[in-house]
Image 1: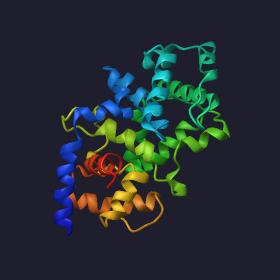
Image 2: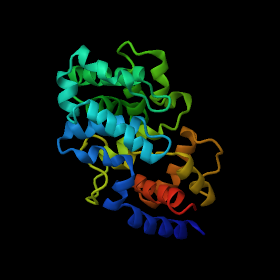
Image 3: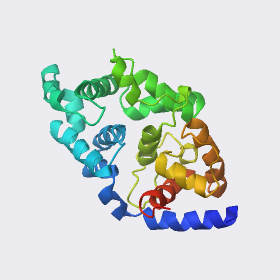
Image 4: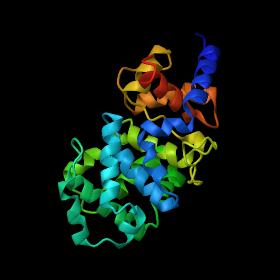
Length: 254
């Protein structure tokens, strides 16, 4: 296929997969449990943070975190005491241990106290230098509250080449607003045109098969390579093609 044919093919798949039924089997269902902005972004951030492995297990563990937060994440972040955090001591998901979970909760508490919201932290970096600065700046802030060294691996470091798949997925959820009912579009400080593809094994393999990616590693350089094409296909909303690439990979085994 030439580029025009690839664009048409992917546009068709975006229409197929960017539908509310996509929510049923995806971790994005976790923030869809809530209506308040702060609840949505906290639930989304925590679900995205453990979004690797089988989707049913990601969802199961994310629901457990929500339950441990009394299914009121913003209220919990705002009012929980140190003793309330003991309830997370038995939580783990793969390599994301209770130590990591408790630190993530503590860091979110600090962020809401000192910065007002997760959005404000990302926006500080975004205004200073764009989307990559937003991602790296957020990491610096998030890990600045006496973080355990073991927790650092759970927040992607694009300065060391990470693709930041989970953070970019979280940002897609928060920023994109196309009224399709999947992504939330509740953040208005970051432009949709600047979002980056949440590159993982599925989207990477499909991109390679379509000739949109030559690089073998799924790192930030690979993200940049794919984004060059996706921005050609739609300069205002290039990351909508995540639906197509992911759907082709996981649903159609393309």
